[in-house]
Image (tube, rainbow, N blue to C red; front, side):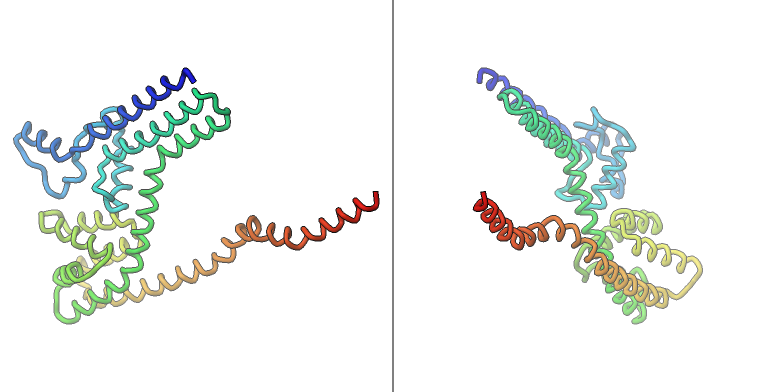
Length: 293
């Protein structure tokens, strides 16, 4: 018990350190403003999320490949909560330090070694927990985009056949649509309006969503514009292909259900059934053999 104050002190130091790291990387806007004042220039709007400055925790861990990977994961997840790379790294460390300090408390208070080992495992898991949440969010966004794409292409096809240009149809769909794809189309139009090339804006759209059908459609649109192919025909054909792909994907998931049910059936349901069937027989047999002695 005399070691408890030491454990509490370590706990406080860990929390203070993690919070300090979080605060150091929590104001990227101010950092960009100071950098621009020093250079006497301003940054383009299209790169506002990428040039966040190497502040906060990134001073300690500043691998370009790691930052690029984390930035891509945040973009695919839709920038949840306005997260930046520095804030994500700080949150990861905050969770890991919190669990690690709790593990130290368990060890200092004389708890069994398995609990301490479990705490160390949870520390590693807590560090990678934000990555898992980002991946799950990005996966849901990609599925939402795939589901919305066919209907969006139908609407664009109708608008183009009615006489609107592709850009005008895209603007109409972006303004009147709902969901993840409509928001991403608005972002793409904003990038084009501030001077980004159409191909670069389309590539960024495909990167942010991570949708393979959407990437294929955007490449088809670029090729159609380059070779002068009517976009109405392209949109109609692409919408039909998207619906076929969506139906095939649904059939594939339906065929996977029996395989996914096997393990829960074996591990959870069958033992209970065996216990209900064989339990009374085992009790009766035990009573019979006990009476023979």
